[in-house]
Amino acid sequence: MSADRNLLKDLDYSVLQQCMHCGLCLPTCPTYLETRVERHSPRGRISLMRAVADGELEITRTFADEMAYCLGCLACTTACPAGVDYGTLFESARAEAERSGVSASPARSLVRLVSLRFLLFRPWALRLAGRLLWLYRACGLQALLRGSGFFSLLPRRIGELERQAIPIRRRFSDVLIAAVERPPGEARHRVVLLTGCIQDIAFSDVNRATADVLLANGCEVTTPRAQSCCGSLHVHNGDLETAASLARRQLDAIDPGRFDAIISNSAGCGSHLKRYHHLLAGDPVYVERAAAWSHKTRDIFEWLVEIGFRKPAAPAPVGEPSPVTYHEACHLCHGQKITSQPREVLRSLPGFELRECPESAMCCGSAGVYSLTQPKTATWLRDRKVANIRSTGANVVATANPGCQLQIQQGFRAAGGDARGQPRIVHPVVLLAEAYRAEARR
View 1 (cartoon, rainbow, N blue to C red):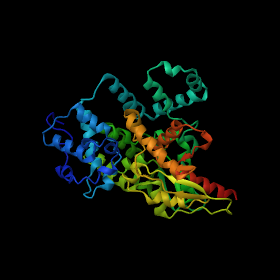
View 2: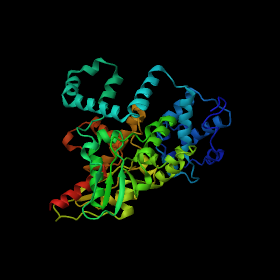
View 3: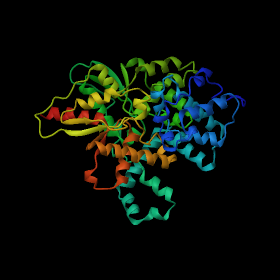
View 4: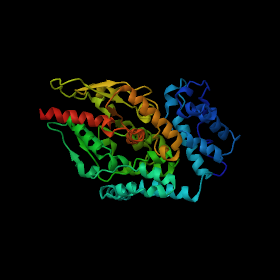
């Protein structure tokens, strides 16, 4: 790309012109609700992007900071009557801010190199880091350092980050799930299960539950070994080049033509996976495969409802049903427009009563790495979410994204109180798998 061009100037200008500045997005935008400042709203950010595209504004640190302050939750796209493609605008603006280097510093560059270009680009490295984190907790070192007050001797931010360390599973997905598993009886569908990166090392139980649910619904499940990151975190952080490399790697490893569906159980990943055709639109080698990939990709709940999933048989009623509430992950409800399907699954569960959560589609503050880069706003959103969940009286909280699950768990821990009185935070597919297992035992 020449020095006098940038990603915003290269966009189809009609995308930038879609915004009518009507303001209907304002009540849905978390950063605008927090600050009531126009530039922190979708239409304010679009105005900045358009000014850059028109050559009226240079890319500055202030512009980059504003794009970084946006959660990318896409709630504005659901509210927008004009169908503004804010996702494409946001990705282009963040990528251009990164390309310009206005936010670069040695420490920041090192963090991005280690996380985006090394750990999340090399599956073996991420799994090694995950194993070390598991050992850190399993051997008692974590409890010892926390109990001794060691982290109080370090800068406060280091202690905060350590408390947000992802809990790692003892066994990863490749140990729990065979390369190919077949359902009892004849397979009605052939699907490939994507195990993800963070999902693989921190929520391998969710992947196992997803495989079990697919098997119970007549699907032959192929789970490729040592899968790579899909690239969603890279796109979210303005690294389109690495994201495109990871997309090509996925397309080389998995032929979408062999399967009826490509299954994702992570909202953020699924939203990005369905945009491979957009990410690789300029690549003549991969563009057709990317289009086929996007066409075949399904969220697990989208697929279950599409094929007519089997509802678990209800046992004899014992006491009152357990109240469960549902937090909608942003990239499931706003990015993929999937809202009714998870609720349909939850309503099918014997022994549960679904209670709607106020502001269920409001972001919890996780948003990829947002809780690390924008802790103040992330904490405000997290606490707001916890308060809304508590108002339902539910003792189970279902959510379909690993970042949301971790963020809400941290919110309840931060709120204090008796751990035994805190709700269980769980992926809805785990509840469905448990219902199938209970049915089989009867």
